[in-house]
Image 1 (tube, rainbow, N blue to C red):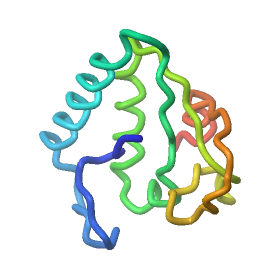
Image 2 (cartoon, rainbow, N blue to C red):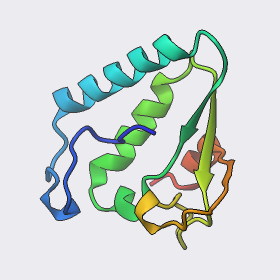
Image 3 (tube, rainbow, N blue to C red):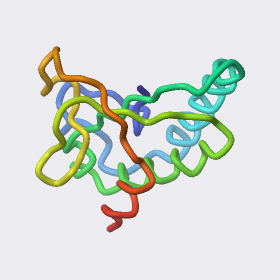
Length: 116
């Protein structure tokens, strides 16, 4: 699991109002480096769990699209847990039962379906 945007805030209202491009660029760089380090062996599972927060700031969608575009060389299996939100977003771990199973998640289809 990676952050869609490299800023963490206990209250999403405290997140940057606008994307800090250098922060986003560094986030993608670190994601790619980590995947390069571990993907040599097998395909990796990536847990998608951004929840409805993706709707909180306009730039978060762009960040997700750019991250997905940067993952073209990695062998990844995308997964999520539990049911999705009413708008189809994979739930954040805070809002899931601990017993919710991992299920396959088609990130490309999700992005196509939810284009803004």
